[in-house]
Length: 617
Image 1: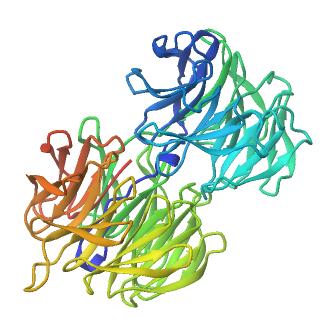
Image 2 (image 1 turned 135 degrees about the vertical axis):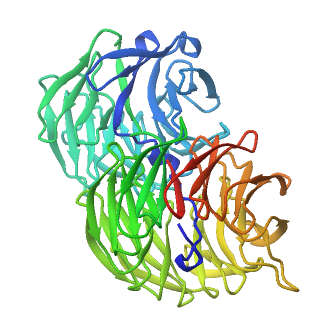
Image 3 (image 1 turned 180 degrees about the vertical axis):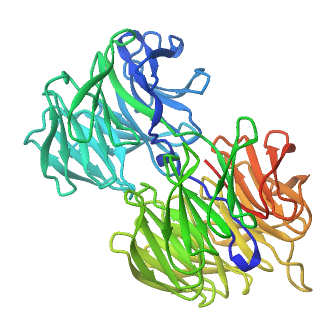
């Protein structure tokens, strides 16, 4: 969305890798270890073999997780391999051997790192996007870790079959026991609901519910459950359990039924839903609607009427719900992305201009620029549960990668309000430069970078102390920042025209290790939005005054293509797989679609009036 509404600028909304992997839509995918298959099951329970043989030959696929782009990662317990399977079912070995020892459960964190339960190694292994392994946590309470899942704050939950415990591991690798013994017996799978309760499969033929304080209750037991392993929720709150030779469905009341059984199944241990779908949502501020683009066909699949002057779209991590800030109506429209209909309209403060969803998808934080507040919407009830007073004219909200804090740019008071998301109170107020417009975090969450549009600077905040540790002079009118996925560089779009003695019409590159500007890259007139591909190779810059997009090679820090687009391009959004970039052309009521391999426009899509924001998910 716009860094400030008055500037008519926008910045892409992205999703974290961890949570976008947590789908709630059919089909579901399961491992069938004894016959080396991954089986796909539709909503009627009908099975098809998605992939088999190949790298699984002689192995025992046992764990599953999806990345943000929809690739499936499979733990092969016999061969100590992690296999990546693309949407077509093609297998490649992502990471092998090393410190892997009978890998079982898998989970992605918010930065796209894959965590692996070493069932025979009493350890959790972290594998970065390049496939490099490190031991994240070992020994201690860990014995035979099996199931893994992350909560909204980045805490890893481990079902440990050997120690008969549910273990929580913080981002530093420190372990604490949430619960042990009691009704637990050989726990294997673990998943969290929206309230933070853990559901755990028990070797004794039951599913336990564990409250955040560790209290255990039996949620569902016996009947169809024999030896339950992995489990996952659908969008309606039904639980699906991998049960050896069948899939058991458990409704919210705990009632069981067999959803799908036998046929292709031989020792089913893991289960994963797919995302609701992938789409690109365009906020058309002038026509009061949202254009939904299907990225497979690059056609408008739906036009959804919303409130007056929609300026931003935020999407839940599972892709099921979109939240649209209607700045002229003081409301947020809640869209069901499966049906492309408005499920509810929520009243918030005056002039809501930006929204951000917590990593776990539990809450939406809305910047109400006209009432100097942030509205907190609970995604379960879609109601406002808190209204938090902040500084003057809040125009941006950024949620820390661990979900613990929301940083709010207050453009008229030259401050950033730091909200504790557990208490929804302001924990700190940080003085920054003049007219802050944008806040972004490094992937590890240790630093926040703030674009100060009038003081021509970027403030660097240490998130541990909430002190400004550096101020980098970058160029005229910095209004948007993007950080490379590895966290080493921050790219700053300096959107104002050049002034004698200053750098204008540039992108400044900050080395995040030193917080010094290491390069000024000349682009075209008024660069206002910037987005970087998931592999970190290319930055795309919308030049609103030049009808163009600059493609910057991040290795050489040079412009490798200047791509003609429509009039007044104001936002850039890149698909999770990195193959396409979508540019909103506010002056020509179109979206240009760029193929990121060729840096050419493949399609121009007519949308509504004054498209100001693009969100790809």
